[in-house]
Amino acid sequence: DTGVSQDPRHKITKRGQNVTFRCDPISEHNRLYWYRQTLGQGPEFLTYFQNEAQLEKSRLLSDRFSAERPKGSFSTLEIQRTEQGDSAMYLCASSLLPDTQYFGPGTRLTVL
Amino acid sequence: DAKTTQPPSMDCAEGRAANLPCNHSTISGNEYVYWYRQIHSQGPQYIIHGLKNNETNEMASLIITEDRKSSTLILPHATLRDTAVYYCTFSGTYKYIFGTGTRLKVLA
Image 1 (cartoon, rainbow over the protein chains, first blue to last red):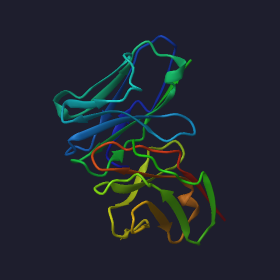
Image 2: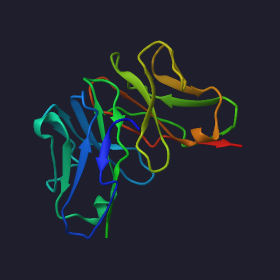
Image 3: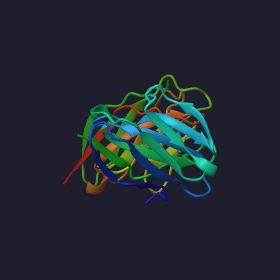
């Protein structure tokens, strides 16, 4: 257990539905990252927050994706109008300054 | 973007040393080499990182070549629980770029 928690661990949804995932980082970590991982691939960077500011968004993050980190604590990742191609493991990580990232257990999304 | 190259798979006998290579020829002078591993269906687990010098911790040793274009992760006495996908990556700021990693299988 790294101290980073994610909820839910598994989510099954139907195409077209909206889903929201939550990440709680290690409490003193000011940086929070979201990655996506598909079968057989390494994690792919999606977006990154320093405190409450979202500082970079990957081009993988289409307009249907939005992430927030209110008050610089937990973060949410919302996917609107889900598509089957969104099926993946969504990983959250946190770090203190530009340092080692600690990953949560991930949320596995299945879009039917 | 940062890019690493690793062999897709390796086998190692239980109790023997596992040596996992990684090429990172585009690494910059201020970028650290990081190693993570991922056991099935779990999030990546941090193992070790280094800049120039060799590093050792309770999990592994990291050997970085003098030109910093490649590194080797050493698990000194592999156990069955070390079976996982091992990723090397590097980052000087904030973003990790992962490749497909090396799938290490430790054999009894």
